[in-house]
Amino acid sequence: MEQIRQRYLIRFSVRQRTEHLLIMVLFIVLALTGFPQKFFASGWAQWLTVQLGGIDRVRWLHRISGILFSLAALEHMLVGLWLTVQKRLDLSMVPTKQDFRDAIVTLRYYLGISEEQARFGRFDYRQKFEYWGLVLGGVVMIVTGFILYFPIFFTNFLPGQVIPAAQVAHSNEGLLAFLVVLIWHIYNAHLNPDVFPIDTSIFTGRISEERIEKEHPIEYAQLETMKTTAAKPQETAPEATSKERGEDSP
Image (cartoon, rainbow, N blue to C red; front, side, top):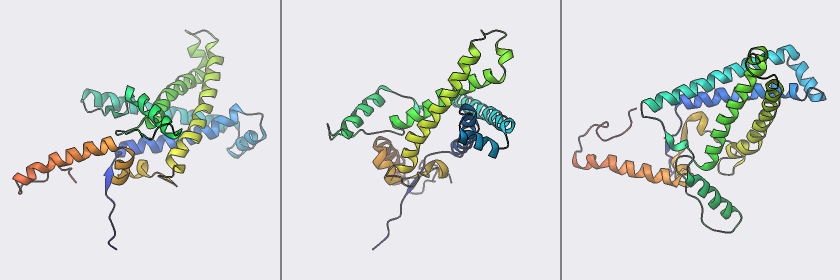
């Protein structure tokens, strides 16, 4: 039997993959150094603190990781602003009313109320939820983290109650982010039957055409339309170069 070769498309750029890897590593370090401080009275927290070199080193690692996380967030924001100025910003991650409709359609399908399945574009509502949850949660963590890092500076122009409030917000938002990643993201990226044991697209940047057609049919239809449009000049001018045919450069 002739083996069918799987076609792959580039879904994530090198910059996007690097950002994801950096955030993933920093998130793990922040969790490992943050939770022992939140649950300091627990035996496991005290054991982990000792394994990491003591409370002073744990605090140092947590603060350095937080600063690096802030710099990564700043880089991501500046790139977004630059792409906006250049009018090259991809708006497919911006939530729309259709996302709420898709969520309802999907819920009805899972409950067996309807046989209709939602059709998604480049990103579905679940991926947008994760992204914007990271963005908004990251803002909370960064702001409250710096307030806790420089309490005297901030209380020069803010009431003193902001310090304990920042501590509660920072601690609880960190726990919420950890639970979302553990329950929501781990399932979608690892335990989902369609990608088990792991979705490698964010690491390789590639995704199979078969998955695009199945999981993002609207995007797949757009790509097919673009492919057809790009192929038309080839029919009238067979000697046209690859650039003239609209194909990607190597």
